[in-house]
Image (cartoon, rainbow, N blue to C red; front, side, top):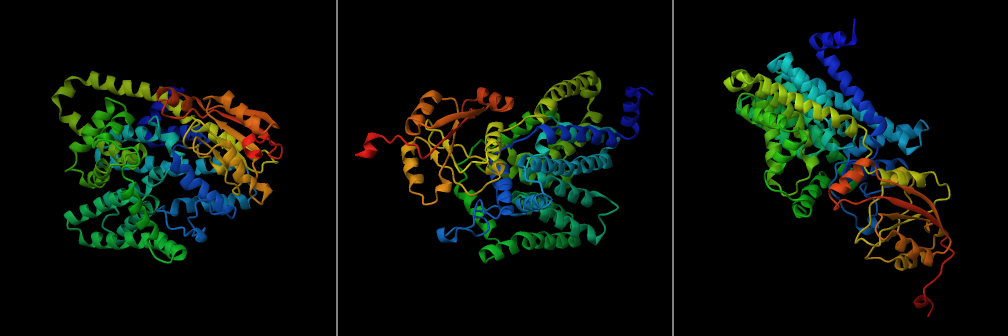
Amino acid sequence: MQIKQVIHKLWEEKPLALILFLGIFFRLLAVIFSKGFFAHDDEFLVLDPAGSWVDGFDYNAWLGGRAEMNHAPEGPSLFFPGLHYLILYYLKWRGMVDPQHKMYVIRALLALWSLITIVVGYRIVNFYSGKKVARQAGLLLAILWCMPMLSVRNLVEMFCIPPLLIATWLAINPAKKDKLSTYIWIGILCGIAFNTRFQTSLFSGGLGLVFLFRKQWKPFFVFGFMFPAIFFAVQGIADIVIWGKPFAEFGAYIEYNLKNAHNYPVGPWYNYFLVLAGMLVPPLSLFLMFGFFRSWKKYTILFLPAFCFFAFHSIFPNKQERFILPMVPFVIILGCIGWSEFVDTSKYWQKHSRLLKGCWIFFWVLNCIALPVISTMYSKRSRVESMYYLYHQKDLKNFIVEESFRNEATQTPFFYTGKWYFHPPEVTKTHTLYQRYLAFKDQTDSLNHPNYVLFFGTDHIDERVAAFEKLFPATTYRTTIEPSYIDLLVWKLNPVNRNETVYIYKFDDKVVNLPDSAIH
């Protein structure tokens, strides 16, 4: 039997198996090739804290460290970093120490976790609309151009999706929805999602409203008890142990976001309409969004939780693209259901079926071009690889981040150095090289004196290196770390993004050519 016939047979008889194969294949590509991190939070609020805990440090002082500095709760949930801690602790116990090798394991586990989204999403659509529409939704969940890459990132916005979808499926499934244990599990799953990403309380609140509107009192009260119980069991108890009171971090999280709502990217109320329209690719995205909003009354249990989440983020000033990711699978699922029902009753689309088919072909051509590119992208490559280079330098004591042409320096991911004891001096417009030299010169522990310097960016690089060599004559060039193609593309499209080419030099901090002003 020819390959084409085998694929056709699978597509007709076992479509979910074929969809899962495609999802696994491209996620495997992402596991192997899509290194780095997506945004600040998935590295510095998840991976670095967890890695430091394994090695006996408290990177962000989230465990009550630095009491002498009157350190207070900062607002993160410890659940997701805690899972990373358990994984990294186990890997260390098994003898795995290389940071990149650890990340292969973590990305693989995240990829496996994301397969739940494909399976459950397919089943929901199949339940409401049959196999034909379920195949469309399943493919979108499996190989939408950005899904494999996002699925292997340490993003709380992605990790919280499977429990939300499973909870929704349990509430829908006729074989489960009359059992008391079902609503216990729904509460547990929504509690897990909430402990991962606090904003998912809006999903859970929407689900509770559905039970309330339908006068399903037993599900409403069981769910209403289990959801906060799981939150208390995870975050509440942790806060009591660390801070002496429950929900300290959650309270700090709310306070921080209210105070800093305008200190992050701010967009108009329709910002996330544009994000969804672009992410799902026009004109298909317009079809899916139309189907999603058109079906609000008929499929309230799919619509209302996602809409509550969407409405809040549309109103709240701080608008970052990743915030809306938990809603994307719900738009795909309900969008496919609603759009297919609309097409079945639309005289226009019945007459223009070739046009509709052409729209789908247009989407899949673009998607299939972008899919392998994005699935193998190495995001923030130069930052990761520069730290990984230092990991291999056995004589590393500390390093300087030199960005004297900027007001603030680039944050570096310590996880890839395998070390946590140093706090790299930063040379910027605010703090000059000589000021930084005086600071670390006064340190009594000479082991923390820097002996490597990382020049970030190509701006005025010759002058910056010359100025450094003037103060430290025993400076030698070691290597250059280039950004990935995707990082370079983003920088060229918008120069506001940083060109993170990194030039690494080694120097002897004991060989110093002090300026005349320092001698007299």
